[in-house]
Image (tube, rainbow, N blue to C red; front, top):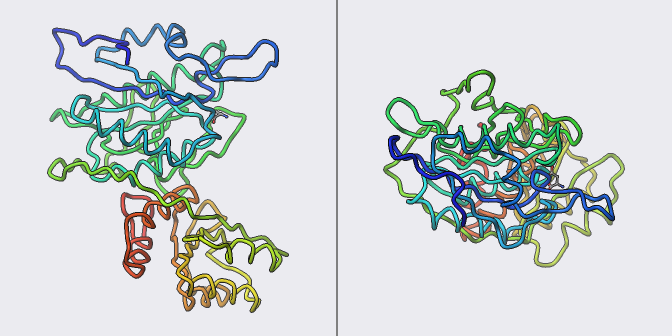
Length: 353
Ligand code: ASP
C-alpha cells in the first residue's frame, strides 16, 4: 500500500482507499508491438499531480495481478470484496480503477456481494490511457475521488452504494452498461436515472440515491456460483444450439436474452428444452435484449408459456446485473423456491417492479 495524499492536520479526516485493478486508464503503449499493456500504477500517478490538491487522505492498493478487464472473473471479485471488508472500518470510501470492458459486471457483482453497504464504492476507468494528452482518465479519476469523499451537511456519505462514474455521470453500478467503445461516454443507465452529474458543480440526484442505513452491519458474501450461462436468442436459432446450452451437465442457471417485452419462440422443441432444464433444477432468468423497457411475461402468447414453465422474469434488469445476481443467489440460497422468489425481487436497486 502507498500513501498518495497524507491527512491534513487542520481538516476533519476523510479517507479514500483506491484499489487499482488495471484497464486502459493505467496502460501504456508497448513500443515493439504498439499494443496497450497494463503498467505499474505508482508510476502512472506522476501523471496526475492534481491529486495532491485534494484535501483528503488517499491510499492506494494495487492488485497483485493487474489485468485488462476482459480477464476479470469471480475470483477477482472475491478479492475486491475481501479487500473492502478488510479496510472497511479504516476508510470512509473506496475508488476502484478498472477497465471499462467489464466494469458494469464488476459493479453489479460487488453490489450483491457487499450487503448492507453504507460507504461509497466508486468504479471508474478511462477510454484513453492517463499518459495520453487527450486522456479522459484524469477527470474520471479526480471526480470519482471527490464523489467518494463527498459528505452531506450531517457528515454522511452522499452515495453509500456501488456506483460507476464516467464522463461526468455517476450511475448506479448494477444499472450501468458499457454502451460505447470509441467515444468518451462509455457508460449508460437506460432504466434508472443518473445519481449525479458533474459539471461546474457536482449535482446529486438525491431521491434516486440509496438511503444511508448504518444500523445494519456490512456483510460480505464471497461465494459465487460460476455454473451459469447466457443464451441470447435470435430469429433462426436452432435446436442443437439451444440444447447445447440448456442440456449442459452441471449447469445451474441461465440468463435467457429474449426479444422485446420478454418474448421467445413458441416452437415446441424450444419450450420443451426450457421445461426440461427447469425441471432439472436449472434456474431460467428472462432478460430483454432491449436496453430500455422491461420483461412482462404473459403480455404476449410467446411469453405466457415461459410463465407456466417457471422462467423468472427479470423485469428491467441489465444482463450484467442478471448474470451476477444469478451467480450470487445460486451460491447463497439453497431453497429453489426461495431462490426464484429472490431473483424476481430487487436486492439492492438492480431492478424496478
Ligand atoms: N480492454 C480495456 C479493459 O477493459 C478497455 C478499457 O479499460 O477501457 O481493461
